[in-house]
Length: 249
Image (cartoon, rainbow, N blue to C red; front, side):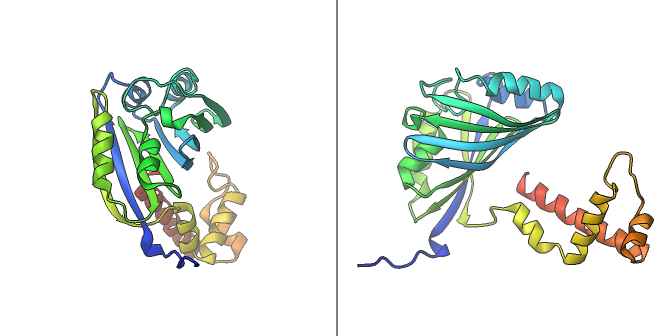
């Protein structure tokens, strides 16, 4: 017997927010100490035994130096909700390092020994889960995409029951699947004329500091009126900024 095809209606998403009081977690304290510091995951997957992810951290140079010292310490756990640390194997690899940004690959073994959000979600809803996470301002926010109709109330109660003192859990939303790729959505919404103006602006140094060309220079290069190029750049910038802010990127 062949199972019926899966449909988008069977996909659900929900969002958990874990709030950390000051002084209960060394890593999360950095987000209080350095308001510029944020992290987000572009990839995060987990099985019952293993988790692997890519995180992007942004902030001041001082914030990222402090972040490196804590986050990249393989002797501590960045995910534990019940105890400050757990006995799991983990490895971190810095894929890209800039003064104000880091890209880090994490690989974790024995996930079942760490009472983290991925562990509890996988145990509750099974395989096929996609995770998105971000940290800022003392909050660790998880968005979860899963297949099925399992009730989230039981999962919420299980996670809340193991939180150590100083951690607080809330459900931000529970809904049908929404947008999971702000970059692709932006690319789809920008017109070819917008892309032409943006590509010319980047190529000729309009976004360099200091700027190497003016809008009038770009208009001459593209054979368009200055007002047209200015309008295309402004509307493209407005779209990109609003979409990335809405997505928390």
